Length: 425
Ligand code: GDP
Ligand code: IMO
Ligand code: MG
Image 1 (cartoon, rainbow, N blue to C red):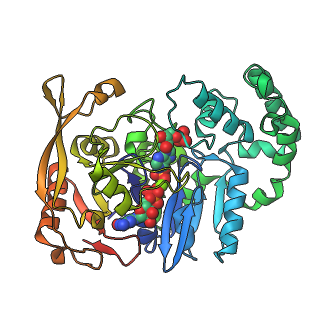
Image 2 (tube, helix red, strand yellow):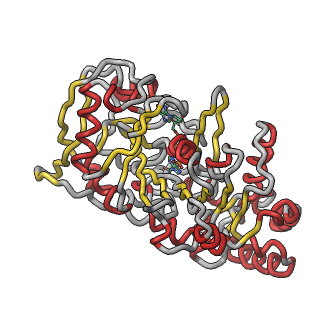
Image 3 (cartoon, rainbow, N blue to C red):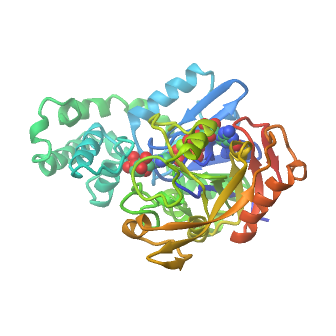
């Protein structure tokens, strides 16, 4: 039996991974983040407390779980310290439970400035990034001029790397003199000031994963963002800059595929997207508005209203394939509780032809006419239901249809943000 699990988002992020990770973490020992950065916002509700985690794995809320941040994450060190400070205020004791890969690339202040500049320079059609410096940090990583956590402990290396970046970026920052974010002396000082705070958290995450796995500890791999934001397989260029799919777990933690275990895909019972880019089933009408209001669809990181639409099976099939999804966690079913009818997009009509393979380019996706199948609504409050068999028949049919069409079994259904509002199947 596979004891480790990977929890990945199957849409454009914000599927409810935080809630699902929090629930499943109860039976696990270790929670590890492998990619993305503080662009993520994972919400965990415990009683009347709400935690929004950006860099720290959502499992931290459980007092006995060990959390790791892998080399594939782009780490905003100042953001992480703020998040820790906030957890402390919330009485979450994390000492000795959070470890960070020495080889994680850092998001530094100039990356956030670059994020702004690159967005401005897209000629009036920005990507709508979170402005957390994610793209620029991954860009430096791939261009091999990134600064990794381990580098901050050597004055000479840190200076040399910053000098190199200063030369590379002289032109782009020329008109930003006076902005502390691209003042390299100030960045140097700030980075040096956090050495001590990070020292006890530094580790070799890959070898730790193997040690823990070898000891029989159960590991939960917490994905960030969602499959359709994957830099290779998502709606590029309207994507994030990391592999948000299971491949990112392997490279982002330095582990082999057999350690991953069961792949659980988190999927909202409808769709949302925040930021620009194609969204074939988007509803810009009253129905879309109702989904946003009932679902509280406002970004956990940036507060932006999320775009909303019906569930898209063409996109979901694609997301299942690129992740090898075995089980679903279907969230926010309750948001559909009051609808008379609910739609699922079964295929795309593009230039008069029916297509059931998710197109790779945004221009084609923009031409999609979704072909829907209509389902009767259940018009019943599902939030207190904890057994699948107790759901109204219409809701059971809706969920079973999604599972059958994608050949995936349902592991859990979420009917509210709270822990108790869950059906374990
Ligand atoms: P993540 O990024 O995938 O972790 O998702 P977010 O935390 O950004 O967004 C999900 C939002 O939906 C959060 O506000 C959750 O508290 C909330 N949520 C999660 N599951 C459910 C659910 O089943 N029903 C409702 N109504 N809200 C949910
Ligand atoms: P979680 O983990 C939803 C989106 C941004 C933008 C695009 C690129 O909470 O699901 P970036 O800042 O990564 O360069 O922005 O990706 N995006 C997310 N959308 N949930 C997220 O994370 C996201 N992280 C990035 O809105 O469209
Ligand atoms: Mg989120």
